[in-house]
Amino acid sequence: MNVIIAICVLILIAYVFDLTSSLTKIPSVILLLILGWGVRQATNFLGYNFTELSTVLPILGTVGLILIVLEGALELELNKSKVKLVTKSFFGAIFPILAIAFSLVYIFHETGSTSNRLNLLNAIPLCIISSAIAIPTVRNLNKNIREYVVYESSMSDIIGVILFNYIAMNEYINSDSISTFLLQLSGMIAISLISTLGLSFLLSKIDHHIKFIPIILLIILIYAIAKTYHLPALLFILILGLSLGNLDELRRFKWLKIFHTEELDTEIKKFKELTVEATFLIRTMFFILFGYLIETKDLMNLDTLPLALLITVFIFMFRAVQLKLSGLAFSPLLFIAPRGLITILLFLSIEPSQRISTVNNSLIIQVIILTAITMMLGIMFCRKSENVTEANQP
Image 1 (cartoon, rainbow, N blue to C red):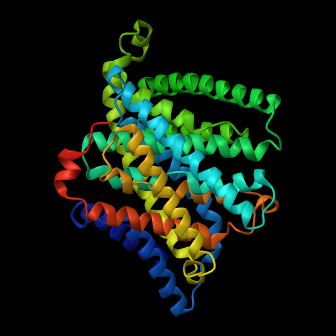
Image 2 (image 1 turned 120 degrees about the vertical axis):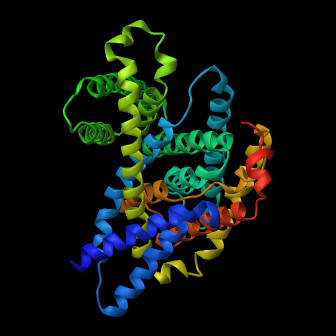
Image 3 (image 1 turned 45 degrees about the vertical axis):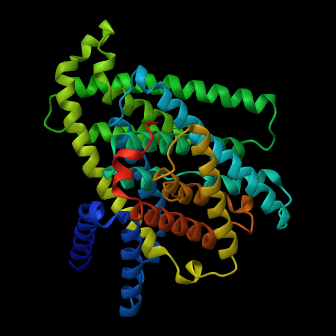
């Protein structure tokens, strides 16, 4: 009963954080991490230890990532007027990843790691914007900023994961590995389109009173199977969300009448509501647990702090260059480049034999905390008028 009470209280506190984030300008993820860390101190004081829960973290993180990207994609509009936005988002996602990654490869090489492949593999998790943090953070900003951040952070996740998997699975970059990679990418696009049609058909045809949970489970299942075969599974989530969220744009295709799109609209609205609720629950549990598992010694490690600060400077320096090249306003977009859930998941997935000593738990935690604090302070000190009216339309 004590565990049940504790979980309920923590999630209700997280709900209060979410309700008040628009007033405090403090991203709820910061408060969740502090809450989790505080619970760790309290349980240590009382003589309890639940660090074995660390095995649950990747599971919660994977499900959370799926739901967060799906929730964001369901809210996006897809039409001809968005081509410019999508293009800017794509280049806004890929440029910082490559620039930061190759900068870190050089630094890691100078610090003693001689394998550039392993240097790149360990650098990539630090180069990816966390959609799990970025998307909820911009919920209260204007529509143009929200759309850009959802596209950019989702593409950053997808591009980062694809690049990470490619480096992890191929010891050498040659024509054979590139051909295999392109084949996998084409296969994932085909699987995504077929799966989207199948799930849409089920959503329109199932008349049982339980229908949305099986659909979500099927989405997670397809994602997990694709990941098992090292396919870019997040691409499926993005395509599914965009397709379901933009039925009005797809109605011109006559063969889609078999889905009864008018009735499907109502079901999709209900599906969105359930997705939002589920996303909140899983995201909350993940970040509270991550905060709980943070070791104070890792957080305060002075050996890794200079490099963590340098990486943070690189992140926002290259982001400033990217925004300048894209013709976008710096405020508040400059500050919305957090590292988080995807960084943790990719770092944990690196085989022990492929890890380099420079990149460890302390460095990952410090970069996540520093980028989250920078984002929080940047948004807090942005004038309200900048958030609402001065940001350029992407």
